[in-house]
Image (cartoon, rainbow, N blue to C red):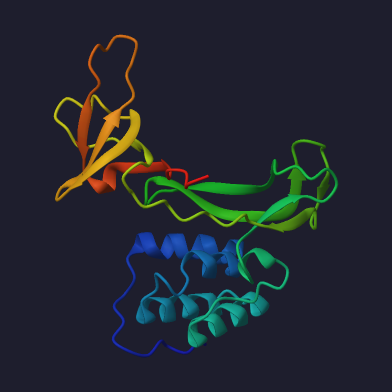
Length: 217
């Protein structure tokens, strides 16, 4: 018999039991990834581990139980995407990023929604048609550049601001000409219909800086 979870756990709701059972039956590693340490509460996950023990899924059971007790995740030796810096999978044959894995979803009567129950190991490339369990060639992601801070002389775009009836300047671009206590003044590029160049005060969070002014030659 499985060991009863310790602590002051309260019974899981039936909708949680259904979701957990589906995920555990599909693959315990998949369950651990979705209900991992970031979103767990110890009593609930101890109950989930006890439920897993009763399913006789020895390898997956031990992996998930160890993950919960150690506060970590299952080993991901076969998937470097979760073992080191961010990466992306590309097809090892043609280099395309247009690859995917099949999955199964079943209707959950308690949640009244489709619930993912399995993700299959086989990877398929939609570009060249290759299919294999180890089709992925993991490539490092390009680092995301840090956003440019607003400075006088920079080119910037106005992001949508909360305005009654909508923001009529959304998406307009121009040059930052002055700073104020409330944001920055943006001298807008003129449209063919405008006769006078407009200057708009834009709060800093709604400025998308496109480029900084060029330095001296």
